[in-house]
Amino acid sequence: MDLSIVIPSFNTKELLDRCLSSVFFSLKETPFFYEVIVVDNASSDGSLAIVNKKFPQVYLVRNTENTGYGKANNQAIKMAKGEYVLLLNSDIVVQDNAIGTLYKFIKDKNKAFAGGKLFNEDGSSQPSCGPFYSLPVVALMLFAKGDYWGATRYSPNQAQRVDWVSGACLIGRKSSFLSVGLFDEKIFMYMEEIELLYRAREKGYGTFFVPEAQFIHTGAASSGERRTPVVNIYRGLVYFYKKHRGRFAIAILRGMLRVKALAVILAGRMIGRPPVVQTYEEALSIL
Picture 1: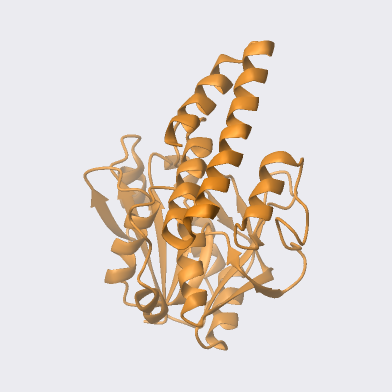
Picture 2: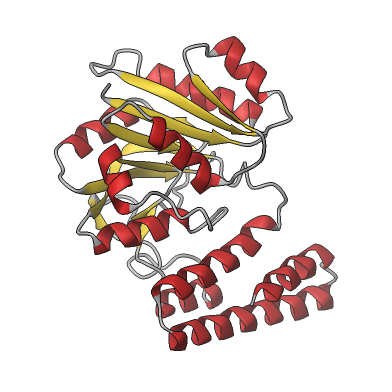
């Protein structure tokens, strides 16, 4: 088996349907052998029925609880038969021959991971790659508006070696994932791929951005409530710094996150935005 395509999903029936349709359409004339593994994290929206009915060729893993992104991917990577593994979010739509493009690229690399270019539904570019989250990068992300290409994100149009690519679309050898140690299952969602690729770099692996491989990414489809991304990003950043940085850096990070949360809470109370206040109060409690 050449390639295993892994798709974790939680209550994303329509998106999963669209994702799988695009995967099989993209690979209809592929010259390599592949399998598709869907890991369902205890969905209650009929996702299982859709997969069984429309995509009987898919190997379906049924979890009894929502295990999170990292653990679901680890399950599938361990059972994957392919020499290479491509991880896709269930809210991805593959464009043209994007999977074949990534597969061809990674086959020519030794000790490497790679990812493609992500688009929003309206055709605008999503942040697809960037530098690791040093304190200056985090400061820009928290207190500056927009993305600063070359600082908080890398160009979405230039093929290059990067620190990280989005986990919504990540390919590597199965042996590479295993050698690095798979995803840290203590991270439920957000920051998992960055933490994994940080460990990969420490082991001598490179990470590459391949803009010719293009995907539409709806974004945050399996995360649940709207406030979840902010809370999990705070939690993921703190965990990453505890694991890979010293006490001084952790203290500065906590201070920046606290200032950001308090500023948003104050503004939210002034303009009457209770959901925003609740979100950042929950994020603040993590610190």
